[in-house]
Image 1 (tube, rainbow over the protein chains, first blue to last red):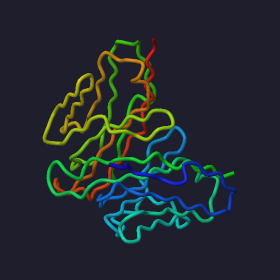
Image 2: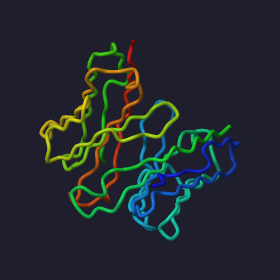
Image 3: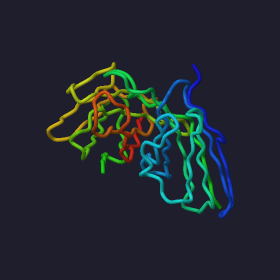
Image 4: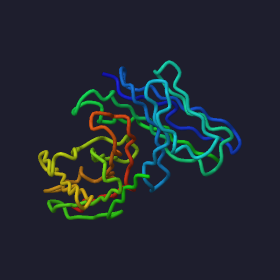
Length: 118
Length: 117
């Protein structure tokens, strides 16, 4: 079974440019999450999709960040315009829908997209 | 909102000794507590998890304990080996239906564990 895949793995852009990160969750996973880790700090929650709907976007830093999940499959996270403080590793993760005690809780991470804004 | 605190931030132990990482959470309704291991340049990998109806869980050299009253949970690694060196993250899933996976998972700040040969 394919895991969570993310693209690009690394990206270096100039301040003010736009970057779009893509995430393909594990097939059949309704829950899709975006997290960000800045060097040496916690894995910080950004937002959560259930299928195509935004369940919780309380972690999105500001309106320069836009996430979409059209059709409830893959998701994109766009940063426009990028600022220096946006640098970090952006992780996507997915999990199954919750239907019982033992399902839906394990979150599987992608390899991350390393973003450097210069 | 939900907050998870993790200590220590760095931990160095002699190979063969035990390592303990501790976390506290703020939301008393939290019901699921996973631990992730992240090796350098790799994705976080789930190593063990515990649900709020269980006080302790063990898997070979790894064990996790949960004290719901104190809102503490800990990771214990025994007989540490060089391959245990990594950053470890605790996490807590917020309250809500026990059967629902709709709540987000909040992570601690991570513990960098180093195993000395």
